[in-house]
Length: 155
Image (tube, rainbow, N blue to C red; front, side, top):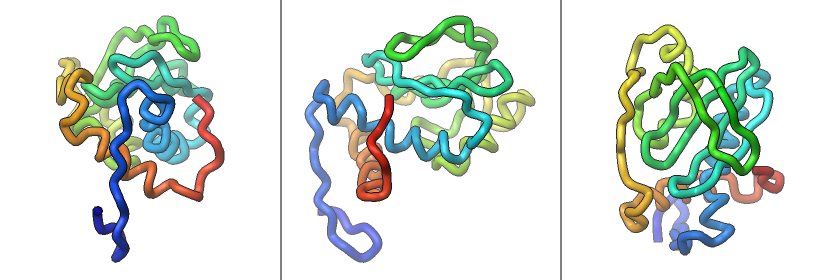
């Protein structure tokens, strides 16, 4: 059990490779998409191993997230729903795998300017192979916070 805002909430283990596990990052990603607003033209989940997603931005660039290196910005060369996107001119935003959604817009602006915590070097915060390292519990916080408040997830 885990306390959340004064209430006890059971933390559920999600089995890897189930539909629930594959869509688990979407609750976090939807919060980021909402905060970026009209800047996001489209977004989709890529394949897994690692789980990832691509946000196509209005200026032609793309913001990608994966469960090993977090967020990165680049120029979209190719990519579509269900396929791994390919970027060039990449800058990693920094801030870990799951920076608070409200911090992503500022980190994106920093990456565009090449300042702040952004870097051209790929960080590796974890491996997707480490399935019991606590990362899915961190993702579960976004599922719990979104429970009942979200429409069905479109990936």
